[in-house]
Amino acid sequence: MLGNLNIRVISEYLPDLWEGFLNTLMLSAAGFTGAFIIGIIACGLSIQPVRWLRGVGVAYIDLIRSTPLLAQLYFLYFGLPRLGVLLPEFTIGIIALALNSGAYIAEIIRSGILSIPRGQFEAALSSGFTYVQRMRLIVLPQAIRPTISPLIGQAIVLVKDSSLLSLISVVELIRVGQKIALDRFMPVEGLVATAVGFLVIYYLLKALAAFWSHFNRTNSQ
Amino acid sequence: MIWFQIERLWNYWPILLKGLGMTVSLSLLSLVAGMIVGLIFALARTSGNRWLSGICGFYIDLFRGTPFLVQVFICFFILPAVGIELSAFSAGVLALSNLSACFIGEIIAAGINAVPRGQNEAAIASGFTHSQKLRLIILPQALQIVRPTLVGQFILLVKDSSVVSAIGIMDLTRSGWMIVQNIPNGLLVFGVVGLGYLIVCYPMIYLSRRMERGTQSPIL
Image (cartoon, rainbow over the protein chains, first blue to last red):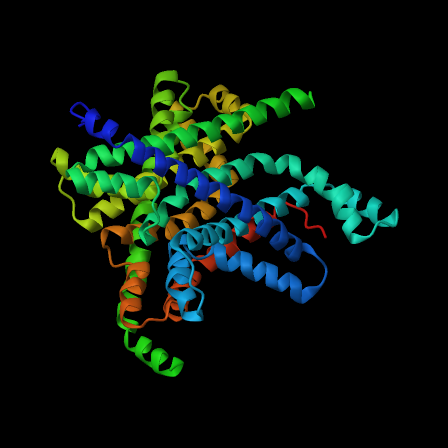
């Protein structure tokens, strides 16, 4: 199957593939930044003491975690115009990615915070720190370390998820692959080129995760 | 206006119910297949044979590194080119089972590695054969360790099954997509679709949280 792969066609479409690759990277980077901000807010809401605010945070996290991204994407894509909000597909895609990954990042940060020994909170509390000080000076600096690897894992998931945006006609890697398939009737070439593009990003992020865990191990010894 | 749309949506309930049934059966079929193949992957990964483990790891990486949408397209558009004709449903089940096998394989392998070494040595010292050791000593403990992660994987599987709607399988997402062409209210239609997924997934999320709570001390 791969023996008679038509490399010439792929190289002909290299500029398009490069554009799709960059778009995928851009979508993912924007989505991840948004998701990180949303994640911190949602996590903060879900662990702070005011009850109804906690309910809002937990409800958001649970709602997102129990529905598929594709349904969320269609919800925004078909739903936002209904509210009079007309946005380009690209923006809707980024919003959907950020909202979706935000819930998972909130859970990652929450478990980072939960991994801190209880005595640290009590010590901060009895030292007279306010909630914000406690979070900023004691909890978050310690909570960040164990979250780095799962965050990279979430970034990998987000890059792959960004492929779903092709279904609302955002031009990214998959869309370019489909273009090759449709223009030249060569679905194999289109899909293989797409898959290679995603694998490149995957292996880069995986190497980053391996580097981090190596760095972490040598540092803590 | 909104009441009129709700009334129209109500008429579509058989389609939505069928879609939900399709989503559940897709996920269940792939779950069973994924567990069996995933177990084989896990045993290969932890067999101690470097070649077997390496090949298996590379195969798993290929599918963990590419979007599921690409895999679905490969099953549906490329396999026919090499002479394997599949209906949309079997292509979807194949792609979904393969994906879940890859993830479950890695999870179970991690569980097997987490079983204390002494258990392995004690089993060998007691004169257990290799298969007895795996079946009676290692796997029960490994599965116990990874139970919450496995439930999390099942939830992901149900959600990933929505992607196969891209090749025209009438699952819950696809039914919503069809209905929204007739009732132009995405918030309402996909709100109902989301509710369908919620009914399936939320009990599992609750379950995995209960399981995790056993291993963590709640603070704050």
